[in-house]
Amino acid sequence: DYIDKYILNDDNNKIDGKIDNEMNKSNDTNNNEIEVMKEKYNNIINSIRKKYNTMIGRKATTAQNVSSQTIALTNIETHTKAKNILIKEKYKELLTNEEINIIKLLDVGYKYLIRSYDIIETVYNNNIYHPIIATTCLAIASIKNISKEYNISREWLIKSLRIMEKVNPMSYRAISFIQIQLGYVMLKQNYIDETI
Image 1 (spheres, rainbow, N blue to C red):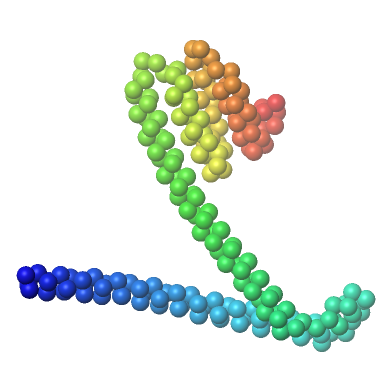
Image 2: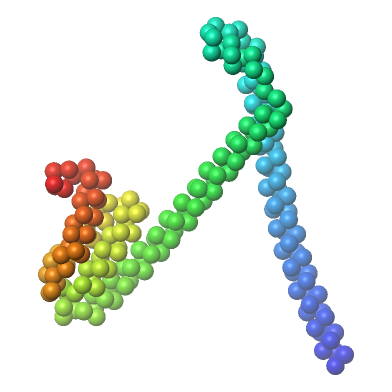
């Protein structure tokens, strides 16, 4: 019983140690990020002050220059401008990271749909004009449309349209939807005459 308690305590200490190490690594990373942000912030403040000082130092030639030079920036206004600039930069950085994640997700979705299409095509081999095949083609085209790969999207839309036109009973709403999507893609590729 004593040995079990000792082993359990030893395991808990090891786990606690691992957690502490991970938290320290995380804190180090956060501290580094904070230091980088502080440095950026100070650089922005210095550039605002430099810009303001050079603006004050110039002689005014027009009424607009006079009004902008006679108004002094307070310390609070300088810090507010710096914070706004820093927030905009961070927002752009986050958007860029989000776009990369979206592209990865679209690629995963495309691979999944292609695999699904292959499976569905083999299952419905006797009936190649099945609505589910056309719907899968439409889904693949939509992924490529979002990815702005309009050539590939157009090929899948045409394939979907050809299948859907031969489905019995014919779904006019689905056909018109595919035609609208195809027209949209062709407009994006500047095929205006073919779209009409």
